[in-house]
Amino acid sequence: MHPGTMQPIWQPTPQAIEHAQVTQFARHCARRHRVELERYEDFHRWSVEHPAEFWSETWDWCGVLASKKGSTVLLDGERMPGAKWFPEARLNFAQNLLRRGDRGDALVFWDETGFRRRLSYSELTSEVSRAAQALQQLGLRDGDRFWYERIFGGSTLRWLERTTLASVIRNVLGHDEWGDLWHCATCAAQWQLIEVPETVGVK
Image (cartoon, rainbow, N blue to C red; front, side, top):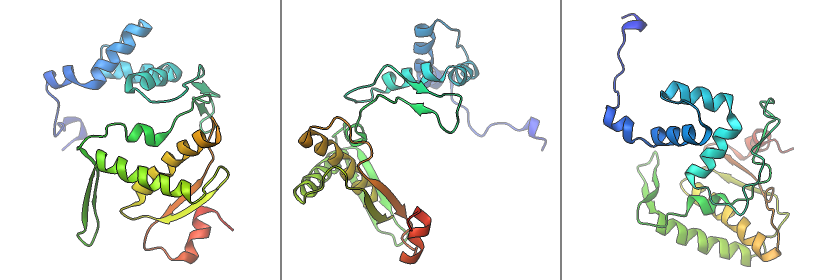
């Protein structure tokens, strides 16, 4: 069959399009910036041509939790890579990821052996809190740099522990910035230890 005659496997209904978050977001941006964004293609083009405005609106629309957003959205936007997004912002990823705190699924893990585990947002928040407190009591402080970990079911949990702890350390030590607290690297579980340094760039 010629590609031009192929039909999509699935298309959203007009009602689904009308109630979609992206439709509401596009209309919000159109009102705020006084532009015509009737079609998705128009919205996409506007987002590419006005990246600072688009991502500032995305930040606000998504309700990013932060102590500071900053007035600058994009520096050196013509450099890709090299552009800097929200250079003045201060936020904690874990705070944003854990804010639901309800019984809905936060993590659903299945491995090759058939092991399965589910964690709700409420359970995940409790585990992360306990782990972060334990790490703090062990003396982890600003300037600690590296945590090596192979990928397995608990990696996301431990990453959240680290990012939560970063906020804890900031509050304890009176630091507003904690950005480069750790250099983290993960490697697949089947890799041998000898392969890790070369992979993550450690000599």
